[in-house]
Length: 267
Image 1 (spheres, helix red, strand yellow):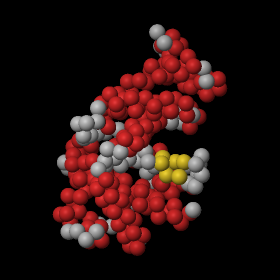
Image 2: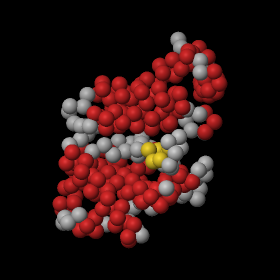
Image 3: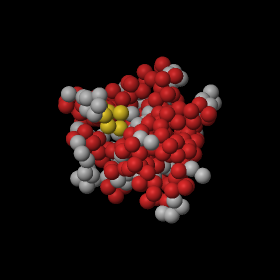
Image 4: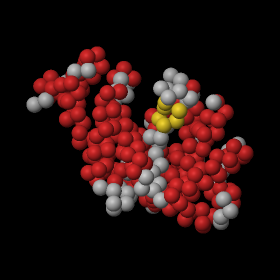
């Protein structure tokens, strides 16, 4: 039986909190090993969710291997004083590590990457000019497409592109980076006025999320906070899984373009 099991079968949660505090103080390799064993199944769980919709040439075992780096990173950087459960924090880090590795092997076709940038730039320019959320018709028009072509383009992008809230947004200092996903709160706390953040960057991200269309905002919350799959979200919202995928992709592109515009104004 490992450290976590020996230390306590009752109350397990309280003992784990004590172990986190102890690990932060002395970096005991035995405690680290215990946490790795305790949370290894979480890596497979996240990898399984990411694997859904991935091309057949992406092996599940590779995703698990990528995710392990995220778990190790989460264990080393977790701060028990921030009132966030380790599992919640680790899921974000594991998913982020998987996406980072997938990006590094560059399996997305160049044409799709180019089209993704074009759509993101179009959304950014339009919404900066309009001062509001751009409609599909307006985005399509700015790209010289009809609405049907735009929907097909979004299907292609959402089917092959890796777009995630684990993308990091920098505030100008390499050491001061904030994940967009880290700023998503539960539905009851989405109002930026209610979110108490340590720095301006998180407030800006929370504001950007709050300005998204309701359905896109719900998808982000359900996917990143409630940890539902795209199929499960489709059942909740009564739309197809492919439609959820398109809306998720559009929400990420919209967020990234908003934050790029804001960052240009800040830096």
